[in-house]
Each structure stands twice: as C-alpha cells, then as structure tokens.
Image (cartoon, rainbow, N blue to C red):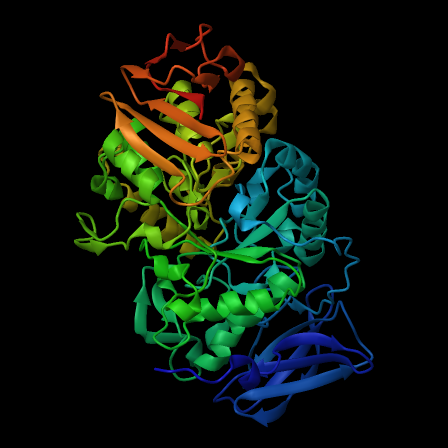
Length: 614
C-alpha cells in the first residue's frame, strides 16, 4: 500500500493553543459525532461555561475563546457524554482524569548555540525521573547533571514522560502523549531540565511510546473508534491504527508529538519503545516519517532517533533510499544476554538462546549482535540480519537497563547477581567496545537499590496488574514460593529510589573511579575513538577468556577479560599495562600488576587493558 499523501497536509493542528490577537483556539477530531463542546473548568476542577464547537466537516470541530490565554482549563463534551480530557492536551495538571490546560511554549531558552549530540561518540545514561532523586522531579535532576558530564556521559535518556495514571509508573502506561507528567514538574520543569542539560554539554533523549497506549485514562475511544485497529495485534492488545481507515489523523497524533518534543522542548532525539510493535503496512513506514519529521523540526541541530527493537534488523538504520527506515540507532540486546549467561548463569526464558561461552561473546562483539539469521530456540523461527549492515556506533549495548533490571521479580540490579570483580570486568568490556554504551542510572557506582516494577492504577486495574505480575514469575524456578513485590504498593516505588550517597562509600567509590577512567580512555585514546568496522576484533583465549582488540593510529589496545578460573595470556614484548579492574584503586584486591614477563595472568573474573605499539 503506497502512502503518497503528506499527513501534515491532511490534518491541521489539533488540541488547544493560543492564537495571537484572537485568544484560545480549540480543534478536535470526533468523526461520527454531531455535537462537541468545550467545557471550561475552574482551578478547583469544577465545570463552568460551555462553548459550542463548529462542525468543519470530516469529523473536525473548532471554536475560539477571545481574550484568554495560557492557564485556561477545560474538558470536552461529545454528544452529551463526558466531559472528557482532551487527548491532544499539552498539560494535565490534575492528572489524566482531570481538566486539560492550555500552555504556551514561551520559555526563555539559553541554548541557542547548542548543536546536538555527535552520534558516533555517544555514551547514554538512562534515567527514570521519578526514582532518580528523592524528590522525583525534573528540577531535582538538574544538580546531578554536572556529575554525569564529569563521569563521561554525553546523553541523558529520560524514560517516558507522557502523563500516566497516578504518580508512580515506569511511564509505559502513558495516555496523554503531549502532556509531560505534572508530578515530575510538567512542561515548565522539563524545559528547565533540557536547557540546563545543554548548558552542561549534555544531550537529552526522550523515551516515546507509540506502539500502544495505557488503559487507564485513555479517552481516545470517546472521540473516535479509528484510533485502534483489529487488523494488527501487539503483546499489549489491540494495535494503534497506523494504516487503516482514519489513520491519517492517528499518524498525525504521533508525528505532531515527535515535532513537539524536538521543537517545543528542544529534545535532541527519541528512543522509540518496542519499535517492532509499531505495525504499519503502508509506505513510507511510520518509523521513517518519525525520523524525517524529527530532523525537520530542528533545523541546524543534530537529532538522533534510536529504536528499541528485538528483531536484530539492520533495515532500521539503513537510509530510506537503500530500503531502510533511516533511524540513527537500535538497541542490540544479545550482548547483555550473553554476558548475563556467562557471569550470572541466567538460563531461563530468552536466555535459553545464549550459551555465554567466550566464543559466543567474542562473536557478538565482532558482529554487534549474535543472531544474524540463525533459528531462535525461544522464538522458533529465524531471527536477525547480518549486523555488518550497521555501523558499530548505531548499535546500543548495555549490561543492564530498566527492562533487564525491573522485569526481574525483585528488581535486583546486576550487582546483586555477580561479584564486584565480575561487575568491574563486564563494565570494562562494555565501555571499551566500539558500540554505543548505555548505562542505567546508578550503574557507575554499582548501586545496590533495586528498580522494581511499580504502578499507581485504580483499585480494580491495580489488582489485575498485581495478580498478573505474580503469575508471570510462577514458572521461574528461582522464584518458586517467593512473593513478588506488589506493584501497587507505595513501598515498591520508594524502595526503587536511587541512593546517591552510596557513590562515596568505600565499596562503591572504586567502581565509580573505574567508570570515570574507562570513559576518559574511551573519549581520548586514539584506538578507542576509531569506531569503523575493520578496526576491531574479538577472539576467545584460554578456557574462559577473551580478547577485544581495538586498533588505531600507532598501535592497538587489547582488553583481556577472564570469566572464571585462571587465565594466562601471552602478549607482545612491547605491551604496556594501561589498567586492570582488580587494582585496589578500583575496589579490587590485586596490588601486584597482572602483566609480568610478557604474560597477563588473571585469577577469577577480571579485565586488563594493555597497549601494544606498532
């Protein structure tokens, strides 16, 4: 199905905005309905005057309120039903069920000289705003930005910000795509955070969810049945309608939202949640339009669009003129899974597809992901395409992220399942690989606080979520007889709050020093600044070891990693020791240098970096 029309030309602006010299203007899409009204609300939330909207035809209704501006609160009544919040609302100060609010993007930005992130040198730091600080707000994150910059982070990735029900949620139950959550600080707070990040030299990515919408507070069906379709299905139920009748407006919902994050909030790009579940049979695919619309919204700035996608498909990052979607990056989870299998012994669920052998870890490092067309035991089908079709910096690797931590029954971080020595060795391999590394907040000091799954739904939906969560883990041997924490409990949320004071404690300070040194090397060493294929290799050595080689001007760096047992690895006579993860300054116990007489000797999990000059 060829889609020749431009969605922008079909669908004019929707929602509420201030028209200079006129007042507040509303435009609503409610096809099949006869009468739509704006119901003004007071600051106390009570309804007041109603304004009839004019039927423009095609399901669109509009009206204007002269002499008014930002701060007006309202709902919409449809054929006498409601009133309901505006699904295109830019602000929901009293939550997803409360009145919508008119806002004006009139922030006094100070980032005029900001050009955006260099995609080849990104180091991404994933943050959940609600648990990153005791206050759980955009404002409270601002004092933390400088320490992230000094660490070596280049980009802060904010987990979803669109308004969701209640005040505690990961954000993937969002229902008001255009309204940054009031509990985090709303539109003003987000603008202050992004502006402050740019002042520190940090880019900001926003995690955007376009594959499904949350159930609680979702009023889209009150306006139109065309927002969803039975033609496709996702793990979360009925799919969003991106290619059927009425889909032009639904696509506009997403593309206008993309524009808003980039234009009105100066975001430097998006992380697209579960892009494999953004189902669209038309041409161009919505993913392509998202990338193109995002870049067009920021003339003179670099914008980065990264997909979370389980398919290992290089089509995502191939240019449109080469048959791709034209995105800038994609998550590549195979590295994480191999590393957890090797160091933590995980073997259930999707880990059944991985051996964790040093041969397979090395292969994953050489390629970028492991599955390039082999049959997946878990999925029962062929998975992946050759990773050589993607530049290394386009693949985002991690050893933990919000999913891999929070989707564990008790939200335990990597450090709870591997030794401190293993954590240091895994970190060295991640940060010195040629791919884009992603850190989950607190990882740089091996934070001990869990990141649990938490929600704040109404009582009935909350009960179903709690029951579903516990059934989900009933088949896992390690959780048999265990009580999975209740997602609805306030304590589940508060336990997930990051404790920044840990970073200065002796058992954590060494890890932080290691991360700073590894990221300093990554940013400055000529061998590590060369990201192109043909300039790196990985191979197993010994029974449980591997070598990652990075080549650049004047020589090479070898990252020698031992998983367990004893490793003796011979290196060229001119090899120079750069660092070893078991040094006491990084929290290790090995005071004697591991390189002696041309042999690197490692006991147990550890990593060594040596320089070999040409």
